[in-house]
Image 1 (spheres, protein in one colour):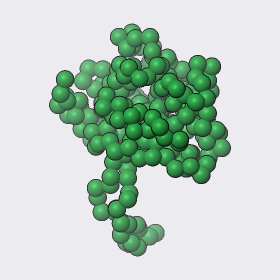
Image 2 (cartoon, rainbow, N blue to C red; image 1 turned 60 degrees about the vertical axis):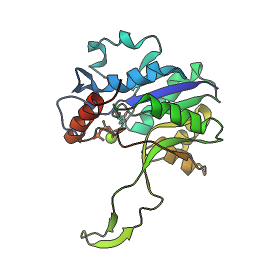
Image 3 (spheres, rainbow, N blue to C red; image 1 turned 135 degrees about the horizontal axis):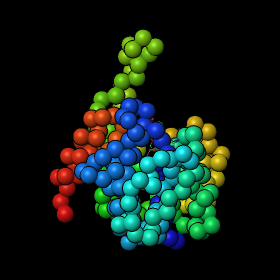
Length: 228
Ligand code: CTP
Ligand code: MG
């Protein structure tokens, strides 16, 4: 099977509260989304990179993406939620993708994706029936709170993982799972709702999601201190 990437980039970054959607904020002189698109397009295993943009995206066309080469395909078909955007991307790409091909869904808001993240994910899941996702073990002590912020319990962090992206599943399985799912925030939870068990592949904390302004500073530090 081949491997395709789908990059949902149709959000508006409300928690970032910036003047434009966070995927277009400047990061080391490029739009934030450029960094992970460059890594995905350069990955030898990946055939094409579909970027799912908002129907009324006003920024994409203002930048020059030609340095990323012919693998990059913008699709102006984003939906109201992340899952809607991914599903719209899967449908728009369906004529190029076989049912058994792997699809790697990667957040536009994770600019510090490294080549080894992609290589490890593909290597560890190559013979998996279901697929899986990059994740990191939870480091903090977790509390479950009641309505008045009173601690009800300490949740043992043993066996708890923080989900990241890319999340990698077979095209047909992912599409069916997302079509059936409601209120999912990632692909893995749609697959879980179908009764299957995605596999966790250990990544690292550098693959952070830019959600709040502090994350942008962390991402800048990570990218500028990376080797090579
Ligand atoms: N996303 C999308 N379509 C949506 C919502 C989100 O493609 N309707 C994308 C975002 O662009 C982002 C990724 O999904 O790359 C992860 O979502 P998140 O971090 O929540 O981004 P936003 O929804 O833009 O931010 P916020 O939730 O703070 O508004
Ligand atoms: Mg969101």
